[in-house]
Amino acid sequence: MKPVKLQVTKKTQVLTKFQINHMYRSDWKQMCIIDYLQSQTLFKELNGMSGLTKDSHFAYWIYQMFGEGEYSINAWQKGRKGFWNFARFILFKDGFIRVKKKEKQEDKEKLEIAAELRRKERQLKKSIDQQEREELTHDIQDVKDDYELTKEIAELDNPTKSGCYPILKSVMPIYKVHEYEDWSSTDNLSAETTQAGHMQAW
Image (cartoon, rainbow, N blue to C red):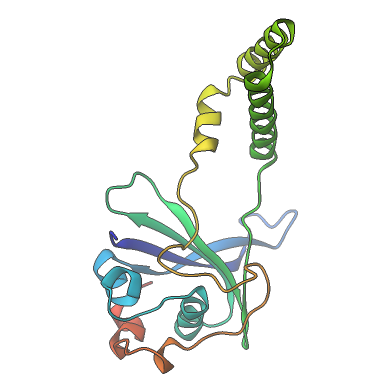
């Protein structure tokens, strides 16, 4: 599998510029960049020998590096255009929880429309009544024309990569509180990869 580059950011509170309505606002501070070479050392899936294998390992690694808080990790992969959200954690002293990405209302509506279109298309394939087939064909085309969703539906049917799999396996159920797991007790990962100085920390 091709290596990845990861950007680890931490949610912080900063003073607002004018402080008229609110004194503070949320901001994301970059904590480190894990480059392509470092990711090969860090994750077993990328080197085939040793390293982190679960989201509970990676959460513990971040906790050891930067402490409690809410973290968002974005990923880039060689040969793939753009980036995706690798994982989002809230880390506590004695455990962590994966945070589900908020679904935008616009995206939700597109998914609902796409599901309805697929339902009508299945009906069309099964229908043998000519009049019903004509009505379904007309309905399908009307929706596509009204929402100009031809391209968007194709993208929804073939979604871009998201999440940490297959580099990391998720502890189930995903969006519940879990204990950290220390990979070093079951793996021979080199200690040098756990030191902040070996990552591009900011």
